[in-house]
Each structure stands twice: as structure tokens, then as C-alpha cells.
Image 1 (spheres, helix red, strand yellow):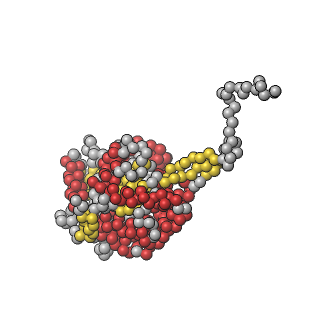
Image 2 (cartoon, helix red, strand yellow):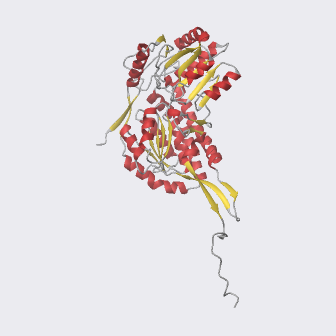
Image 3 (cartoon, one colour):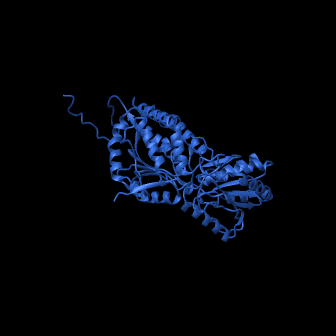
Length: 477
């Protein structure tokens, strides 16, 4: 039985969107029927379609920004940044595709040529997250379409309205309707899409638990490309610096931006012990000034609610669990309205917690760990199965060189937030944070596969060894 899927505004609880759940077989079959013709188009034609998509987004920018803000709860100013990033991705991915998958020709033996060209995989499933419901999937759909794939996009069941509008904008740009398909649904539809025999690749952004399940499900199918971005338990080290106010601003941006709902958000603040009292004082002052409110409020809030009440409840339970293990609250996690998922930023000292949970607390909770020396700081930073993002605030160039060499992460920053990577750079991590850099400028690498060819205008061949001699005894008469 096909059921309706509903989306509610986190800030108000109002019903925002309602639609029928999709049928996986139908969507995959439609995409499979369309991709050969799409792939046969010149790449310049596909690139021009993406430029029209960017123009379509510009034409409805205000509407998309408002929708994202209402559906995710993020402030309107942040939704505008997300939509601007969607537009910017088009030119970036066009350039990246040309640079990373451009045709190459080399001279071969016997007047032949060797060429390297790329082919699309076929039907690619894109499974998106709720925290950036337009930007993250656009960063995978755009390069997949440029490469000549057809796409079945399943947005998060928590943000289907934003996903639906994103696909409508592709249609407005003239992308054939069967080339990019929207699959509305929940976990069951996602599992069926991943396992569908008509899907040639899966591009996933989300939790480690779901990503690992996808990887296991496809372990017996090496023919399917699987690119995973699965978040992180990201460390931020604070070392010798004279400007603790600036350090506090970087820490707050890293830990509490997007209400802590970024895969690159700082989860663990590792502090030189002598700096602890000073940075705690600066953080308390700054946290007390942060505005938490609905997306369209004036003055504009720094952060909105988390995505739903279930998530807020779980974060509250996690904070209490850290306290029960010996964590010392420095700034308590607040819940101003028990009926809505607004949370105030939290800071907790977990130095005395013997077995710290290596999990991604996807919300505004920052765990502080005090250390005596820099080697211990790096040891703490690496005390995780994840490896997405890491940052160092302060320290000398020698400290940063050691940090860069020894910390295990795909993104390593100095004197900046744990996020903030440019769109053209590769984005992703190691460990259970994922593989294949499934976002950013290297997306072309998993959207098309290289084909090496040896080519000659005429057949030229001879066998010079390993043959019996030609019998010429009777050839002279």
C-alpha cells in the first residue's frame, strides 16, 4: 500500500509538505530507459543543461531559500548561503569534469594511438541528508548528469519538499524527466534502491550506521560504485595562542553552526591544560550571546532548532549519559520549549570519562578534553574510528606540521573552523567517515570510469617468434 510522506517545520510543527511515497522499480526503470540517449549527447550539451539549471535556481532563489529554512529550521541567512553554493557548484563541476576526465591521447606502438576516455556508469542512486537538502545532493547530481548518468534521487524523509523542488528545477532547465527521478520515501525505499539490480552506483551522504549498512549490502557487488560520506567525531585542538577571543569564535562556529548538524562540526575540543580556564570563560561569554530561534526571526538567529523532537530528545539523553559517566557540565544543554526541538549550545568537560563514546553527536554538544602536551593532544585527536575533519587553533608552524602529518583526517585546517573547504577541493574522509571523496571537485572521479584504448587506422600485426618454419622445399621449382 502506497502511503503519504509528510514534512513538518521543526520550528513550528506546522505541516509543510505531503506527497505519495514513490515506487523504486518504476523510478529505476524510467531512469534506465533514459540514460543511453542522455549519455549519447555531447558533453557540452549536458554541461549547457547544467548552466540552465543554475539560472533556474537563480530565478527561484527566494522561494528555495524560504523552503529550505522552513523545512530544516536553519536560519534564512544560512539557507541563502546553501542556495548560493548550489549555483556555484555548476561551473565548478564543469571545470572539474574537464580537468579530471578530459580525453587523453598518446602515441603507441606500430603507428597506433592510445586514448583514455570516460564512460558513465548508467543509473546512479543519490541518497541525500536533511542538514543540507539542496547543496549536498546537487553536489552529486550535477557531476553525475554531466558525466552522462541518469539519477534516481532519494532525499531524506525529513526534507522531501526541498528535494522535490530541486528536481523540479532540473526539469525547468530542460533535463529530460526520465534522466533525473525523484524517489520519495523512507528507509525501506532507500534500502530497496541501494539493492536494485538496475542501479549501477550509489552516492550516499548520512550517518555512519546507514553508510556501513549500504557498504555491507553491496559487498558482493563489486561492479557497483559506492561513494560514502558518513560524518565524523571531529577533533579541534587549542594550543598556544594569545587571542582566546578569536579562538572562541572559531570554536563556536565549528561546534554550533547549523545547530551542530554538520558532518564537519567539531565534536571534541582538546585543550592545553594551562589554557582551559581562559577559553572556558571566553566560550561562556560568547555562548550566552548566541541567539537561538526560528529561521525568519528578527534579529536573525545564530542557530535554529535541530531537525525534530526525536533528535532533540536523543541529544538530551546523550548529554545526560556523558554526565553519568563522569562528565562535568560547563554549559548545560537547554531545551527552551519542550514541545519544539530548539536546543541551546552545550559544553561538557569529559577529561575524566574513561571510556568516551566514539559516536557522532549530531547536534550542539561540544566535549572538552584537557591535555598536558602536544603529543597527547594528537593522541586524543586520533582516538576515533572516524576521520573526516580536524583543526588546530594556535600553535607554531612546527606544531601544525606535526598535526598535519600525524592526524588522520581528510580535511585538516589551521586557525580556522573544522569546515570551510572550498567547493572545488575534494571533500570526504577516511575510516568510517567514508571513501572516494563523494563531494567537492573530485566527484567526477566516481561519476565516470576511465576506458583505455589502443587504436590504429589499419590492422598491422605479425608474429615473430614461436612459429614453426615455413616449408620452402618445393617453392623453387
